[in-house]
Amino acid sequence: MKKLFKSSQFKLIAVILALLLVGMFICAANGHGETAQSSIVGTLFTPAHWVAAKLSDGIDRISDNAKGNAQYEQKIDELQKELGELQDQLADYDNLKSQNELYKDALELKEDNPDFKYTQASVIGRDSANPYCSFTISKGSVNGIKDGDAVLYGKYLVGVIKKAYPTYSVVSSIIDPDFSVSAYDVNTKELSYVTGDAQIAKDGYCKFENLDATTKISYGSIIATAGISSTMPKGIIIGTVRDINDETTNISTYAVVEPGTNIENLDNCLVLTGFTAESEAD
Image 1 (tube, rainbow, N blue to C red):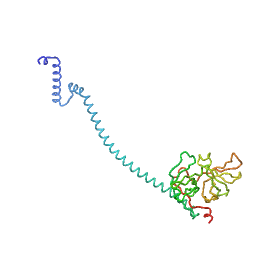
Image 2: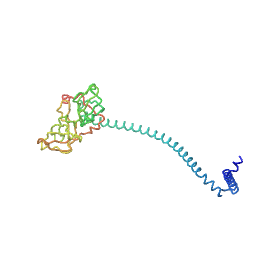
Image 3: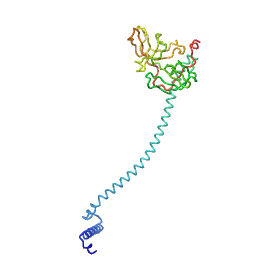
Image 4: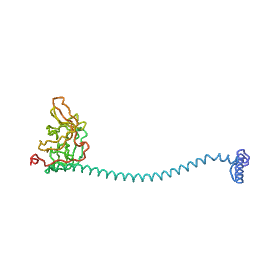
């Protein structure tokens, strides 16, 4: 034990402790810590204070952020709920607006043709592999729909029923090359037929074919059904003329017709049921 008290290490520690005590007394007497000893002590302990301060600040920030994030998350949830409700309301509004337009134009057509009967249907499917905008609707033969019935959007012709199944039907659009209907120009009364064409169908157009080279049909002319078919009444608008071109395979001319409505974006339609040529004649 005596050896420990006499050792140089013990003496050094004792000196340091003594210096620290003296420094503390001096600081207490002077009321401030401007001594060399206090500077030494401050230098020794400053890193620890810095670390402690940083940790404290970090904990405070984490706590504040955690509190803020919880509030933000709650607010975001509330806003997302409100957004969802608004989107539902907007979808309902768009649907009602679309149906209103659908029935408004159809009503005008029905006033001129009181014997017309319609079956409203929703578009429930599209064939992505079909470039001619064919689609499937939610009504079928149990609803009185049959093959060849005209499919309308308001007063515009969009296609015909290609195949009616019991609870759904497949519609062939007016830009499909397999589609054909007698038609005439409302202004000049020129008569021919409208059919689809693979080339211009890419732009959403169909053709008013087999016109005379001296045709008076021009840009903006309205093309409507001629009513020669037993399932297609007269006067349903097909579309308007966008261009007049000469055929490359013969001497005839054709008009490029833009459909009266955007077939690709339809979400509902009307099927003309119960129509016969005899009922129109009556």
